[in-house]
Amino acid sequence: MGKKTWIALIILATILVIGGYVYSIIFLPNTGFSEDTKVLKIHTDESYVAILDSLESQHIVKNVKSFDLVAGWMNYKNGDKLKSGIYEFKQGMSNKDMVSLLRSGRQKPINLVINNVRTFADLCGAMSTQIELDSISLYQYFTNPENLSEWQLRKEDLFTLFIPNTYQVYWNISNEQLYDRMKKESDRFWNSDNRIEKLIANNLDKNQAVVLASIVEKESNLQSERPEIAGVYINRLNRGIPLQADPTVVFATGEYDLRRVLNKHLEVDSPYNTYMYAGLPPGPIYMPSINSIDAVVNADKNDYLYFCAKPGYGSAHAFAKNLSEHLRNAETYRAWLKTERIR
Image (cartoon, rainbow, N blue to C red; front, side, top):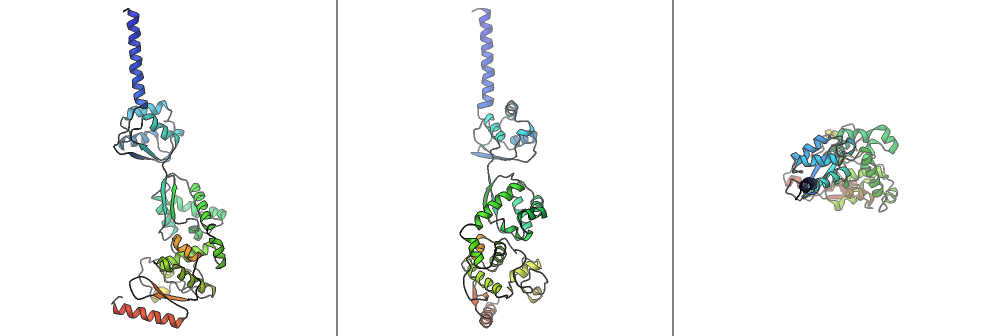
């Protein structure tokens, strides 16, 4: 075998070795975790170095040097290629697969849960634990007077925009995108099941319905009797009788863990004190559930003007059409409390 042949064989072998190495670092598995999948959270404006560090420290990438090489070859290191979000990596992915995923921006959506808050500030705080936006940014954007004017909303009406539910969104959703999504979902909700038409029949708009639903929510844990309670309040509104709803007084005091409303609490001068001021308070006292909203939308057509707690531990209420009947119900309940030695 001549010298030229040996040289040719050496060159070929070198090419094969280099080619095999390049193929391996591009196409062979390079994940470093044992689970089926693992997620990586990339913040807005996060640097490539920080992303690389997270991939290594969270054991997503097994050989970070080979990943870094492929990322360079695929032009991923440039700032405009670094996309924020939550990315899901599958066991056995290659460097090419992983870089392609990050370059593409194909995020894994998250479930944004909206419910069970007292104020809009509380809602912003709850959402900020689930998405990238912080609570201050959320609150400032949604309460910005210019935005509210454009949306034709008052600050007190914002709960009509956020219907309690679970929504799939991207973790790095922007304020503008969040508004657009919530507006779409809100419109879909209010325009379905003849909700608006039913409210009009009860002389209510959707903002008033949410306010009333927030009171109904706090009056009863029994979903079955909420339409009946809503009917009582609508009757009082239509007759110009103050609602005299204890939950609104609790809200007015700011003592949200208050268990019993006393005479001194009724003297708190606040537009939310429905003992002192007739009509609905200016805004909701809680984020009402869909069940409570629909209890108002489908309020019971009754002649009741009063209700109070029934004896027993079931949280049910006794309803009355007139004051004398209501006072008898209240006395029955007080007698039961005395018998049970409950103060």
